[in-house]
Length: 178
Image (cartoon, rainbow, N blue to C red; front, top):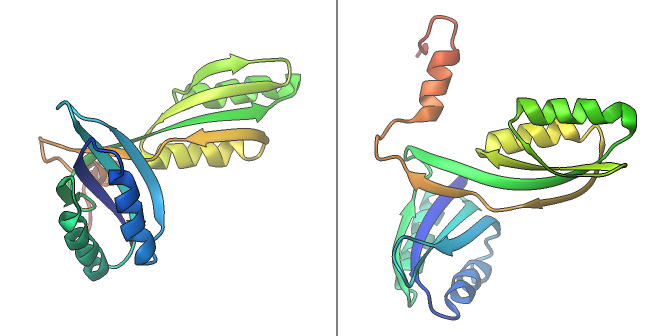
């Protein structure tokens, strides 16, 4: 199972190296990693996606807590969160394909950030499902280059689980069957 961890760290040199070293020593691969400053000077948030069973992830969290400069570690996998990723995707186009690419961009509310005779570069921001969906659609064209951020996340203070809400609203009768 894929887990999302949110780690608050002090901005000190080597902290990311110690975290990645811990993962490497235990044979874990980090699927996604994003690091950035928080609202507090000197503190950064690291958001990472890691695969593992619940017991293994719990052990990993305990090990993270023991590292120097780690302030807090949360497994936010099953907590109502806001998740976002950013993808820049450069697609090779012909004159006939350009309008189809621009229509896909419009549907996904992607921004055209560069356009040339033979390519279109889009900026797509959204939850991981949206990023995956537009990537799948654009894969039928010639993808020249992709750059993606890791997933970032914040816990929803409203405690509303939008995934559950979306499934409920998408159901024809407006509710889920058990």
